[in-house]
Length: 333
Image (cartoon, rainbow, N blue to C red; front, top):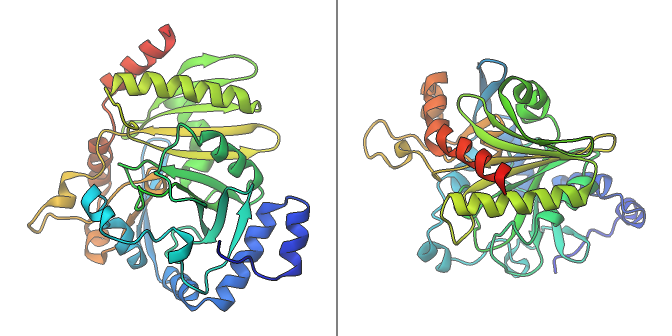
């Protein structure tokens, strides 16, 4: 197990189960003491961004050279089996410190950031990326880190650069445009799957993204709704393994959880694999789908357009027919 910094502030925060401020303090210490993290955040200061306005929401493009390894990662079973797991504690850099969460997860600073403050929340044991058994943990993490951060999950076949090791990520609230725009998008493009005073369950097609959302103050209701959805979605996609999805869990004390489940058809668009000048290194995962689309090559960032982003998103999401079928089947179950 990687060591927690010997810091009185962190100790006091943890006594009060204040994981948000403990994580914030961890970042401050690691930024000063760990050269690799410091270099990652210096690189983050050089990122370029531009924004594209759609009807009621925006998608930002970000040139972030520090994400080249993650974006281009080979995640096929053979490649994964041939490399050391970079999330296992024995393979972490000696300078990397962490905070133990609920005896199961380790909160680590991510040295290849997208968020202004970016964490990886790794499972202590080497266990495959899998949401159905750990969704409740994601809700706990997003609640306990909610003072500053939201939590994301990338499925093993749609964005996780370590599909062999269970992990979530956390980053600053309201960094992703969808954090601010969610209700406007839901009201404009959403369709009620189920709604009462305690639970809101919607299906959304905003023109380029397809997702479902679950909102409730009651954790048990959120978990039960997700489990039911997962079963229906798996059957619809004819999947024995985890169906393709990305999640964002956002918690506010007055309103509870808001979970967005992006419904995926493909891991990467065709242009990722192109062998001519049309090639573009883009591999959409939760942060991209939340409205910050990362391009680690400057030439790709320079030529990306609103129309190209729309085409990329439409290609990697399920189609409208699948979403409608999901709504029908879920409503009948």
